Structure formats: C-alpha cells, structure tokens
Amino acid sequence: MEIVRRLGTSPRERGSMSNATCPDIFELSDGDFAVIGTDMTDELRGLLPSDAGVADYERIVKVSRATLVAAKGDIPAA
Image (cartoon, rainbow, N blue to C red; front, side, top):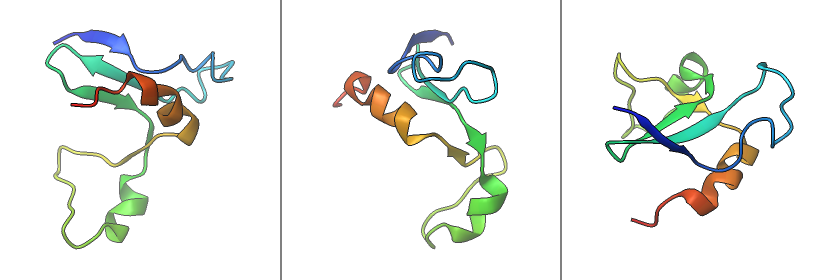
C-alpha cells in the first residue's frame, strides 16, 4: 500500500508552522483514506450512538474543520 496523494492543503499552508498541529488526509493506493488527527477514542467512545462502535484495532480521530474543508474539493463523489 502507498500514499497516492494528499487531500486538500498541507498543514503548513493551513497555518501550522510546527509539528504540533498537523492533521492531514491522504488517499491510499487501494482507494481508502488515511487520516492524521488527535486520538479522541477515550473521550468519545461513550458518546457514540447506540448503533456505532469502535473495534479494538480502531481509533476515533478528531480532524480540524479547516483540514476537512480544505480537503472537500479533493474528495471523490463516488
């Protein structure tokens, strides 16, 4: 598996001048996406709707609004 491209702008282009805040979204060669964000699993697990769950190998990741908005134009419609 490889990273094919970044969706949206780089953290630096969104105002991060350090490695402290670098949320990012990448498209992978298998068509899925990888997200760099803040692990919020412990804080949000108990707040999920009853029909949602988090497997032991999954994490709930918070991505800034600016990151997702910047990526919007690069997210495929289908």
